[in-house]
Image (cartoon, rainbow, N blue to C red; front, side, top):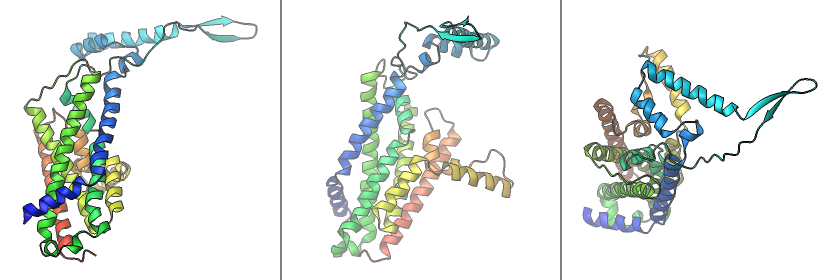
Length: 321
């Protein structure tokens, strides 16, 4: 019975236009983000070259490195001012600017021009555009049940609502995983078009990051699914999902964190945002410490399990009309 429910939910998901439109939007966004990361010459805008930055990185914070860094910035300022001179006129000083004949282009080798695909993948996932688009799909997929009245006409499904809801969650898990893979494919396409070369480097740390970031993404979608189920509304689930994924609650969370630190006399390093999925998705990267990774996994499992149980309980105990 569960397998039949799963196939029916897969068929229903395949008929949603958003299932195909959202990946297309993702591809466009990934290309744009990757263009900024790979092709915008931030070093050139700062009056530096990649060789200068590499040299500073190798020298680290040594006295020579700091001295050279200061001298480099000072020289850049002198060069920027070489195109200007003062001429004394009748009643004062007038600043005249000499037009520089050298055209400066911001398009070139960006900061991530030589980076590998895993690093570019992390940078794109960290923008939270993936969970924002998946929040839209989740709201549409779960809310479509109530807007079209599909389930209320299925007597067998009404008698086995938990199985049906579980099948729906499994479809969501599969779609989010495929969406994650498509994100990686989009990053590879971006690297092939813009980067120095396509460096896959799919080592153990990347595979672990890929799975953990998918787990956090799926847990976030479970929250959106629970909200949609509780409210019986596509708009409610999508709105909450977009708000959470867009970071609109950052200021409120900061204020709440400050209040908790003062009222409960917590340590100054306490940060409530560490227990949020979106914050962990931004912070966790390919080189994060094991304790932070473990916290992200635990937070995702707790939020995801709670959302799934709440959604299933509400789905079982009320009328679907």
